[in-house]
Image (cartoon, rainbow, N blue to C red; front, side):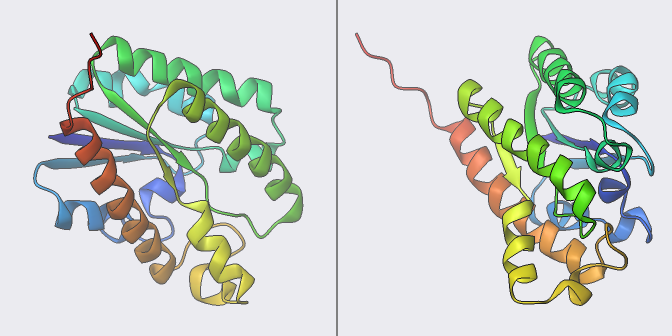
Length: 191
């Protein structure tokens, strides 16, 4: 198994190193190779532009696609952002790679969160309609925010703290466990 995670600074592990990213938890829990292809500052357009080089050329079994935070900062409309996600999913499936879409964590900046909410709602609908796996990074963060624990989870209004990255890592491991088990169960065939 080879998993590539592609995305922006929140995949990369900013403001820390890739070793502190949420992907470290996956590396510790699952056999196989885990490759971090997060790039600080990337929009979904940038992620899409390097998808061939950073994902397809490396022939993974799975790709986790997590992005949208910088698009929300730039106030890009959903119509533009959704095209990038659908194109990356299509390219993955054409190469036999299982795409897993990540729901972005909350932004503490209200204007950005309004855009992220649109992206998340679309990602939920899209994955449900196409029976695609997803990792919900949003809900665990929101539960902690509802308890007033933002200072524990963030180093600024957007990027996770070390504790925030650990929460993302635990979330990814829990979600991936069920995704991988689901892939191993043969589909029921009705005659």
